[in-house]
Image (spheres, rainbow, N blue to C red):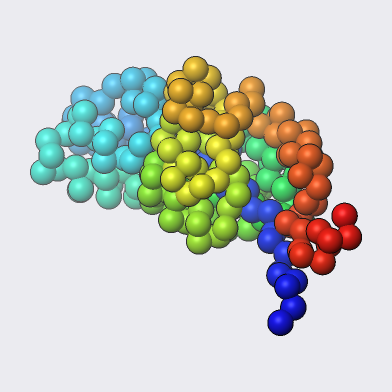
Length: 225
């Protein structure tokens, strides 16, 4: 039997909110619309300081427990109307995805957001990852990262760091969301970049340092090195 194994494609996962997109304006507008529709008090400015965890956790600040499932459904229904056009890409987001793909790697998005709305955001902004997986938060992201054999996961939240570490992936963090650099490092981030504009250069250096290009070396290529 040959000792040669199939090359391992470099796969990089990305979080969505506050990593690839600045979702604060759209989420704020959606909470304001939900408050106007229901008559409930929602401090939308406060809510957007806690982006990252699942929607139900934020709604628990503003609605009785019994009402949360219905309010979550309604929020997701009105979200496209209020949030998609209002939400810009984070600086360097498109270039970060394209940097992975330019070296033959796969770029995937793994997010806690409602997956159909995540896809709407990416399509609206012209960001084209190879896969989008929604409804996963923190450690739960590890399942998708393992399924796609992601070696790197990029996110802005300590929950993203925990997801990467649970999956055995390298945790690359950006302090562009609610978590500052010291918190990301304390959570176990392996690398903290200032923002995604720094990712293409970091990725090129990472690949060069490992001599792996877009895949890990096979037994034959390793023997020739």
